[in-house]
Image (tube, rainbow, N blue to C red; front, side, top):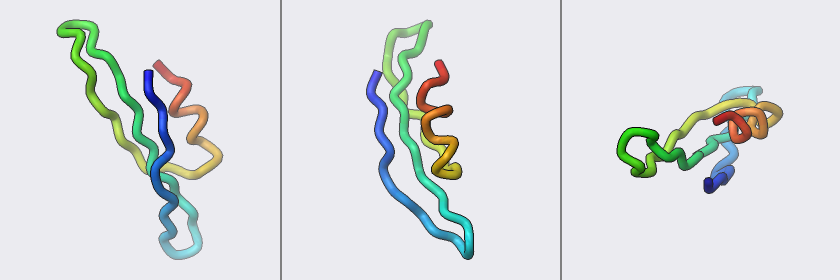
Length: 50
């Protein structure tokens, strides 16, 4: 599974990070990308989730 933190975004006083994770579909076996924007301290938690 590929994991990558792509960009650091700043909005006002909050720092946010855009994280992209590649996930394999159990039905078709195809890979899809899941993107989210979250605080930098929660990126590892997002990437380690299945």
